[in-house]
Image 1 (cartoon, rainbow, N blue to C red):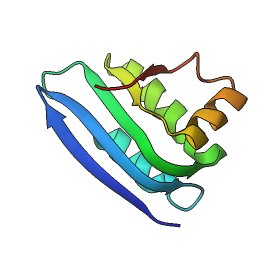
Image 2: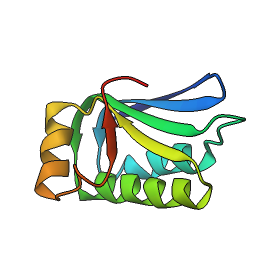
Image 3: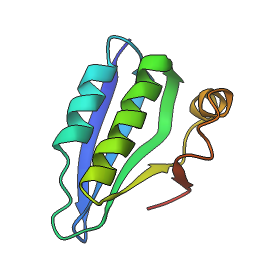
Image 4: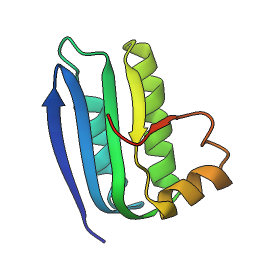
Length: 105
């Protein structure tokens, strides 16, 4: 149960690349990365989920909190290339229509 998080900045926008499993034990680390991200002059905060192999409800809650926080900061919150396991969880929770989902950022 490991997670790797890499922060990138491009044109002032932030992209958080996540690799591994997002579960009860690792979601606090992702939460911290999302809440600390502050696009400097940009308008978007993206979370790349293409390499996430598993996500449980705590991971979904983390993403929902990120969406809410980004809205308060008037920043667009984007999920980038969710892997099939992540997409399945989002669809089961009916959140695939709530989040902005893109192939790239």
